[in-house]
Length: 309
Image (tube, rainbow, N blue to C red; front, side):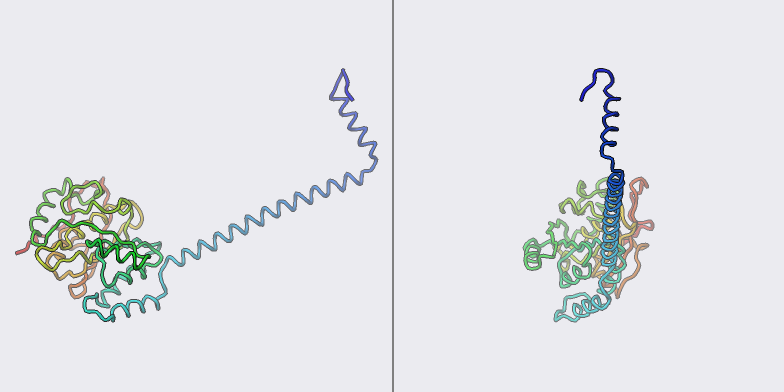
C-alpha cells in the first residue's frame, strides 16, 4: 500500500497493524530468546577457536625453543666419542672436539656455524649443530660436490684460494698497508678487493651473523699450498662485521702449532681475544662485533710484531 502524504507514518501504521494482527507475544519472545542463544553460541565458538589457536601456538613455540637449545648430552658424548675413536690418524683429538661441541651447546637460538675445510669431522659438526645451520667451505670443488651428493644434509661450497704459504710475510704486509681501504676489519667482503679476503662465496653467506667459525682448512703443509691465511682473515672480518644477534663470535683455529695459523691468528684474531689453546693444536678466540661508526682500522689493540724467518 502506498500513500501520497507521508510514507514513513504509513509504514509505521502498517507495521503496527501487522504486529497487532499477529496477536501472539509469546512468539516474539521465543524469537528474541533464540536470537540471544545463537549470538551466545557464536561468541563461544569464536572464543574457543582463538583460545585453542593461542594454546597450540604457544605449545609449538615452546617445543621449538626447547629443541633449539641443544642435543641431549648423551647423544653429544656418543658422537664425540665415536668420532674421536674412528679408525683414522688424521682426525681432531677428543679434547678439541669437546671444546667446540661445548660452545655449540651454548647457542640459545639456532646456531650459525661456518666451517672452513671438509674433514673427518664434517658429519660430526653437522650433527652437533642439528637445529642450526652449518656451512662448509672447501677448496676442492669435486670433493664438495661428492659430499653433498653422498650426504644431502651437508651444505658445502667450493672457493678458489689465491694465496701461498711461501708468501705469508708479503701477504701480511699487504693487509697492513690496506687496513684503511680494501682490507678493513669491518666491511662486506662481497664488495672487497682485499687480496686475502674471500669475496666469491654465495652472497647470502655474507649476510648471516655467524655464531661459531672453525678454521680447519684449506690444506697448508707445503710451501705452495694455500694455507689458512685467507680463511682466518675472512673469519675475523665476518666476526667484527656482524649486524645482529650475539655481539660475540667464537672462532676456532685448528693446527695452531703451525706457522701460518699462528701468525695469521695473532695478526687478525689477536692475542687479547685468545681464550684457550689446547696443546697448541686448537686455539679458541672470542671476537667482539665492531661498528663501522667506531672508525677503527686496526685488528688488534696490542698489535703483534710477529714475523716469519
